[in-house]
Length: 250
Ligand code: 13P
Image 1: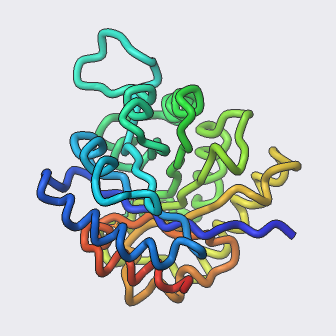
Image 2: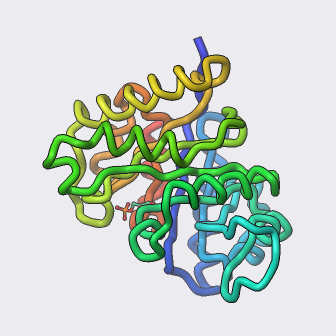
C-alpha cells in the first residue's frame, strides 16, 4: 500500500502586503511542530514570494506561486514564468484555479501547457479542477471533472511533480461544502482515472480538497477516503486557522 503524506496548502489569492510576513512566520513556527506528519505549502501573491523565502527559516513551509505563464520568457506584459518563480526559490505553483479559468478564460489546454511549464522549471504543479453549481445540479460533476483531468494533466505526471486539487467552484469562498459522501465520490473517481492513466504512479499522487475548508469542518473533510490534504483559501490568511486545519493530522 502506498502511503501519501498529507499536504496542507494555502492559496492567499490577491491578499497580503509586506507586513504579512508576520503571519507567514507564525505559520512557519506552527508548521515546525507538525512537519513530521504534514507537508506545508503557502502560495502568497508573487510580490511576496522572495521575502517570505528569505524570512524566519522557512524550511518547514514551501512557498509557491498562484499561476505561471506557459512560456519561459518573452513579450507577455504582466505575466510571470515558472522559471521566474523557481528563480525566487518557489517550489510549487497552482495552475488552473477556477478563478483563473473564469476571469482569465483559461482552458484545459492552457492549464496543461502551464503544468508542463511548471515541470520544465522543476516546480510541483498543483492543478485545480472542479464543477460549477449548475454543472452539479445537472448531474454533470463527474463528466466535467473527468474532462478537466484528461485535458489539464500532461502524460509525464508523477507523485513528485503533481498534486490535484478538487475545488467545486460553488464551494469556494461561500461557506458551502459538499457532503463527505459527495467528496468521496469525486475523489474516488479522480483516483480511478489516475489509476487508469498512470498505473505505476497513480497511488502516490495526492488529491487535495478545496472550498470553504475551515478549522470547524477540517476534521470531517480530511477524514474522507482519498482526501490527502486541503487547498485552503480564506482560512490560510490567518496562521491560527491554517494551523488548526493542519492540526487535524497531529
Ligand atoms: P476558500 O477556502 O476561501 O473557499 O478558497 C478555496 C480556494 O479557492 C483555494 O484555492
